[in-house]
Length: 537
Image 1 (cartoon, rainbow, N blue to C red):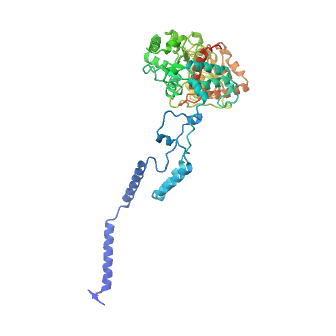
Image 2 (image 1 turned 180 degrees about the vertical axis):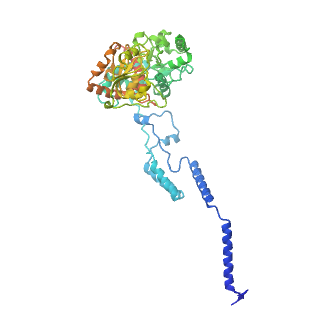
Image 3 (image 1 turned 135 degrees about the horizontal axis):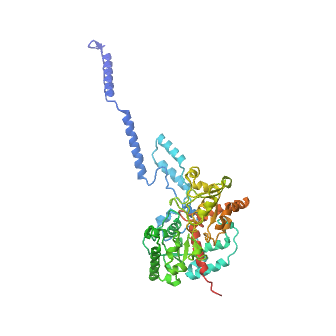
């Protein structure tokens, strides 16, 4: 055995290897890696890679196919119309989708992708459970134009109106219309046929003249919002609008009485004549610029004004007062401006939030309405002070207030009072109109209308006795006796009718058949038809 420095050679080799290992271990411990920094770095890189992948693709990875959206309005109306020629790329988007082939494509794409970690796969499964894929529906079929529609569209405006007048007079009875509740109507058959003819025939020309804010700028909030919502809807939703005045059956003067007041009225001057002069000059300008006003002296023109001053802004122009169809909230027949049968009573609707016009609509069932009658409001006009004097703080069943007291509103708000009352008293204010009538319908409370000489909205169509009470001003002292004498069976029928008529007084963000926009337009259309004298055979 070879001895090296007094030690066997093999033992020396082993000790040398041991020293080398110890040296390497000391070096490794001296340069030890910070594992927390390494984990943080890996997490940042993984997140950056995922974000990069998401933004490179046109849609997120877990939605391999962009979701298809379908208009709820078009789906509910079951018709759609496409104007103009679409390019090939747009047409391909409307082709029906085979769901089975879509599933196979999804599998192929997933197989071609690199396998993700267990943690990422688990996260994807959780997200898929929380937000399932939306179903893909084929587009609705295009609207089919019938031979009858081609015929009525080919008629000149006056002949089309005469044709519609004859059709309404010779209408057959309707017994099975799921969209119309017959007890609400004077004659549901006439209304349905007239409405169908309006949808297929009516075209309105909107004068482009007039500067903002008085013209073409709708006021969408407050108690005068009806005029603004009508203006916005007819200008944006152009089903009934034509750009060719020669094809028009009606001509719309797009002014707002509320905006006219804000722009021209001098506060505390008590003088609205400048507003009337301004509107007179506008109509004279239209008559000089276009031939349409002079052709009928304004009989086929209409305006929509909800402000109390609406009728009084017309008085400086004689033809505007006598001939034009006026849709007014202040539908008072005693002043000689509003003419029943020719003019239209416009519902006064309070819109508190223009983005959510249907907020808080609805009420309680009858068993949860312990209050017999309710009213709260400012004391102006001739009726409200009398109502408060007779019934204010006199009877627990008759909750009649001026402005709602704080001690009362702390326990129950104004809207909660209406939702908890069987009857909602709707007295006139300075003028005959009141927003409480529509508010009562919103909260499913039977309205009690106290306003002599007031023409109720859509009275040519609706039988208001089916869902409301009209009480004469002289009968205010008998009000509780009148309400208490109504049998429960009749009240239940009236309250049911209130729920059914509610949809005809709602402003929808996008108009729906038979809603308040279409009902106003139908009243104007129906008034125009009443002016048409049928030619003798």
